[in-house]
Length: 142
Image (tube, rainbow, N blue to C red; front, side, top):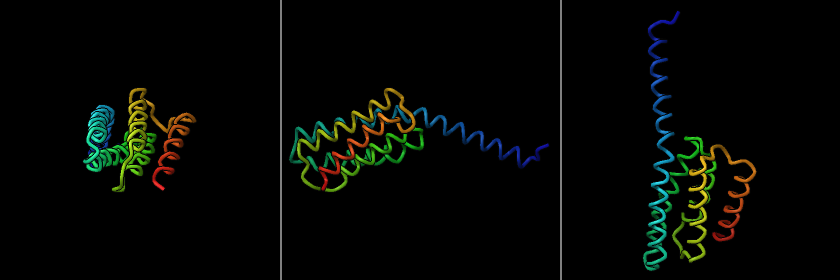
């Protein structure tokens, strides 16, 4: 038989688990909104090269959030690709059109993961995709 303390703890734990489940459901929806914001910043970066750094800084902030949240909600591949995007956008520097294209590739990959509900690490294909993006970022940011 459970005492009142155990029952209260179990009830608190059940409510916490339900809250996390609700957050996980809304993660994909909010991540798509974040990706849409990134698309807007990327468009501005392409159209207004003189303010490109500010637009990229906004993308970095969103990528940092996606990186931090992905694994918590069952999407560690988003965390990995978000980390790569953070590495690309982290430092203030001249961002070329090719850099913007690479940012777009990261955003497209995250959008695909969400659309296909690819949870976990994405298996061999997920690993190859992330590794390719990481390689391109490493070549770009040297």
